[in-house]
Length: 158
Ligand SMILES: CC(C)(COP(=O)(O)OP(=O)(O)OC[C@H]1O[C@@H](n2cnc3c(N)ncnc32)[C@H](O)[C@@H]1OP(=O)(O)O)[C@@H](O)C(=O)NCCC(=O)NCCS
Image 1 (cartoon, rainbow, N blue to C red):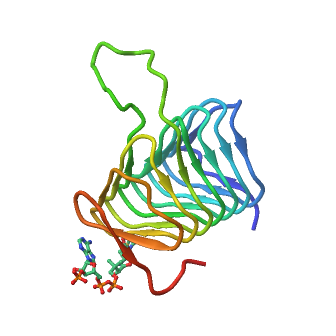
Image 2 (image 1 turned 180 degrees about the horizontal axis):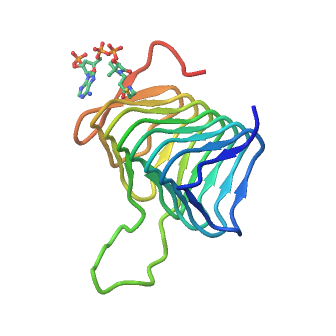
């Protein structure tokens, strides 16, 4: 599939977009972001400065990854998922060091989950809709609720 960038999307010239990636309407890709091949950025999504997405990832409508976030390959980010990157936010603090948050290959983050600054979500893990994840999620596990508790996961993401 050819690369596609919708005319209403804004992609900074310093960002990297891999072959076959589709960027739909009103998406925003900030400077130095790196997006792999065959990804899909749905409407109204954003990728922060220097944030990284591997190959084959999906960002669904209204979600975004902030500076400091790295997604592995084939990560699914559902609609309206929020990643936090400032562990001590202040309106006056314009120059904070973003926390490092990483999401392993094949992980699935369902709709409207909140991922707190600095957590690691392991390979093949799943986060339930609306979960608030404030601790690391081990590979292959299922995080549910607020604050998220960890349950075994029956099937793994592909
Ligand atoms: C939500 C989902 C993960 C539940 O999967 P499931 O295998 O049916 O899980 P179960 O219903 O057996 O739930 C397992 C446990 O987690 C709890 N749970 C499931 N979803 C939950 C949620 N969103 N919040 C809190 N707890 C939840 C259940 O109550 C159950 O707890 P218990 O064992 O104490 O009774 C699954 O339906 C799913 O993937 N939905 C997709 C949602 C989505 O965002 N899609 C993309 C956008 S459309």
